[in-house]
Length: 59
Ligand SMILES: [Zn+2]
Image 1 (tube, rainbow, N blue to C red):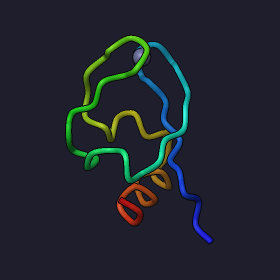
Image 2 (cartoon, rainbow, N blue to C red):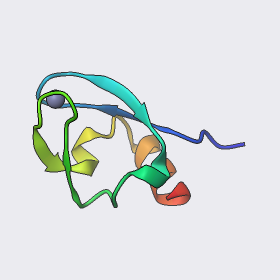
Image 3 (spheres, helix red, strand yellow):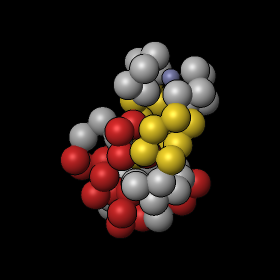
């Protein structure tokens, strides 16, 4: 069974959290940090390549 979430890390404020891949946009889309509102492509919030793979498989 694959993990049903991806781990995120804000590159600006270092907030760490987890999210359901089905609630996230594609990795290349813009995304806002829920804490500091930093706006970057979602891919830059993904902690590892594994997170990117999980996102692409489950969303
Ligand atoms: Zn942030």
